[in-house]
Amino acid sequence: MSYPAHWVVPGHVPADRVVDFDFMHPPGAETDVHAAWKTLHDGPDVVWSPYNGGHWIATRAQDIETIQKDAARFSHVRVTVPRSEDVQLVPLELDPPEHAAYRTLITPSFLPQAIASMEEDVRALTIELIEGFKARGECEFVGEFAKMLPIVIFLRLVDLPQDDRLQLLEMAELSVRGDLQERQRSQGMLMGYIGKWVEERTRNPGNDLISLIVNARIDGQPISPERMFGMMIVVLFGGLDTVAAMMSFICRFLAEHPVERRRLAAEPELILTAVDELIRRHGVTNTARVVVQDTAFNGVRLKRGDQIQVPNALFGLDERRFANPMDIDLGRKPVVHAAFGNGPHRCPGSFLARTEIKVFLQEWLKRIPEFEIKAGEQPRCASGMVNGMLHLPLQWHVA
Image (cartoon, rainbow, N blue to C red):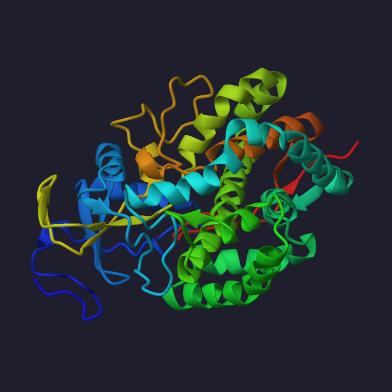
């Protein structure tokens, strides 16, 4: 079978597994990125995309979970598509057991007891942001709220200046939704930004996460500059865009579904259990693994060095795992999703993300229980390494 000249299709890939699907620009993603990804469920469980260097995509929850937990066959050595050889993302791109020491270094900052002490700050900032535009009767949710809440909280965690937030947000956007060149540019920008702080925290360490990393020792040795920078990328970018994206998708759902929105507003105690259902429906990350050795997997032959993408959104949208997966069921139990990964690489910041989303729902619905998409405008989404909402204009009545 002949393919377009720009398609990358190795000889071991069967023709019936090749799909015309570019995850950076899937048809319909601008309107509904999750529905755009969901179309992959119309075909085989494991497919090959000829774009972005060529890679497999696991589309079903069972396979995604297996791959996430099986580092012996599916390495984290390069999780981005197309793969970048420039900077190793630490500990994300380290396999067990090597990754454990680096993960152990940052995990205490994100444990429930550590986050519980920050919840008051999260709540105060949430209220401040909402009250800042409530009287206007409208806002652009992504820029005025969703991106502001996680980055302000996170800058406190790493003790960086609040005035730097817009600069860091620009880098994060390039990092998670840019092409290979844009991702490399983002890394260069961050390297220039973070260098001065590494020097400063080496001389004058504090109790923040950056000080912890730059002064840490792994197996008795200082962290190498390359791995230290890889950790900075993961720490600084890891929790910014993902949480903003999840909140924006959830807010859009509530704006367009008044029945569920009014139920959450009337029964705020339901928010505590509904958070995971809302996250399940709106998964955002599309990382990949590298095949360690030639292996048979769900009807295909995977070759050593192949990349296979494990889109967390498709886990949550799989009707084999969840009944009516495109619908939000506020009473659904249990909701065991993969939005934060599974296995030893499960996102250490998941509790912070849940806390921010929970507090957002509690305080927003208390103050603006009735809202909708602004008349005459349309929300805009985008796909990439992280699915995101680019534009979410809202309006509400001001008494």
